[in-house]
Image 1 (cartoon, rainbow, N blue to C red):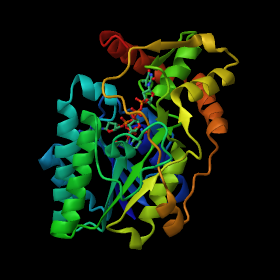
Image 2: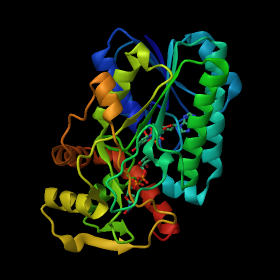
Image 3: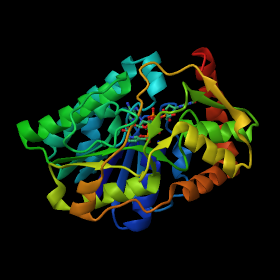
Image 4: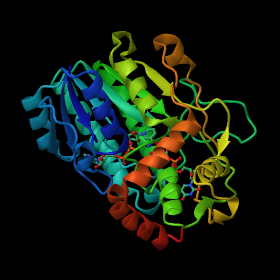
Length: 336
Ligand code: NAD
Ligand code: TDX
């Protein structure tokens, strides 16, 4: 395969490139990323193969994107690049609209012109909105879209655009809507790395609202395996797959207590802070379709891989320290 990866210097994209170069060493990869505050090329410094290349480019730059497609001639596009942090989308939505919608459109146009074999779009369960706390319902491929933040609305728009390019122009697409990932190289603005690095710094865990919100946690390598299972299977073209991890509900308070347990600390480190506006109550994903069609299921146990992830942050302070300083300035400005 010749894979054009967008946003490969971010959290999931860089984990995916590590995964792919390890498991498919003969495939060629071009990673394009504009290196926003969330992109970090050092995530990929240990990749030595000449099958992997990086170019700094903004997916909104039509001319540059056309040139990339012409020169590299990818057969598969895996589109991770996006603005991804809900709190930042509440503060400044414009860049979310630009990158997540216009940037996706730009890539779709280039993919169409260059006859690529597959455009795989990485999306989120947040496009479905929020579940009630006491329901056993879960999001699946039939759930209607009801996004609640500018981030999730921009991702929902991009999903619709991707689907429309298949329906209107026959572009061979696939989409995965995944739940909350965790693992190495996740920016310390996000909940789990934020609380782990706070505890390393002997600070409190800031829990929004009453901490009862539920997220569906998935170790990042399981997400990479899910994308792999879709990409390697031709019958998945035109399909959407929901990807998730939890077997039972885990509230933010529950997962904060797991992290405290890993650090051997007690609950007095928890501090309830001002809630996020429009804060989705609960996400839960039904991953039956990808399980039945492709045999995928989560492999990594949440607690055990939370321990490994915590250890990674303890050992890689030089990676997250500069990012955390900026992230905490953002939170302080927004009183979070
Ligand atoms: P991230 O914020 O860590 O990384 C995003 C990457 O995209 C960065 O490297 C950034 O530099 C790059 N980027 C942003 N704007 C760009 C532009 N205009 N041009 C080129 N590159 C640009 O994000 P992530 O958590 O790795 O998420 C990756 C994808 O997965 C996103 O599409 C996101 O919506 C989706 N997703 C994330 C999660 C999660 O839990 N993190 C869950 C489901 C889906
Ligand atoms: O300091 C915090 N305190 C807190 O209680 C932060 C940063 C978050 N939270 C809560 C809000 C959420 O209920 O923790 C939960 C997780 O928050 P985030 O890490 O911001 O993730 P979320 O809003 O759920 O979105 C994430 O998952 C889906 C990613 O950021 C998205 O990119 C992805 O699509």
